[in-house]
Length: 113
Image 1 (cartoon, rainbow, N blue to C red):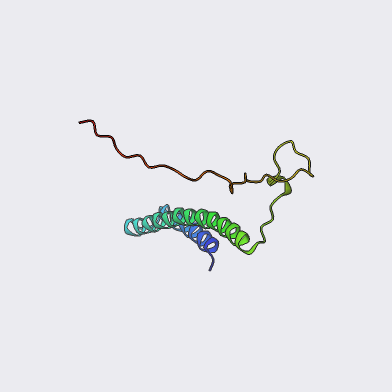
Image 2 (tube, one colour; image 1 turned 90 degrees about the horizontal axis):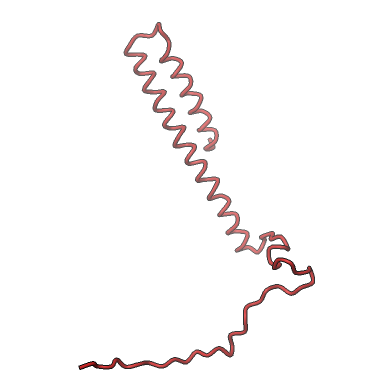
């Protein structure tokens, strides 16, 4: 049974037991029992909705991660194009860092005393 099916079932049971609890011909102990069951099913519905939202969010993230890893990610052509450049313009590239200055000097602390 999927999460959506469980959520729908909990909603139906919450409504059923709430209707039962509101029946004026029901004894007080039975009405309290039905009310508590309805409240429990409403809480289950709330948790189910949270779980469904979390699952939906993580499914999208998982699909994107797998698509990137497998190289099947469909990215629109404009995603890599800077604004205002023609289709034939080259994509943005990183600057050449092979000639970057990487040396540094170490300073020794100066005593003031």
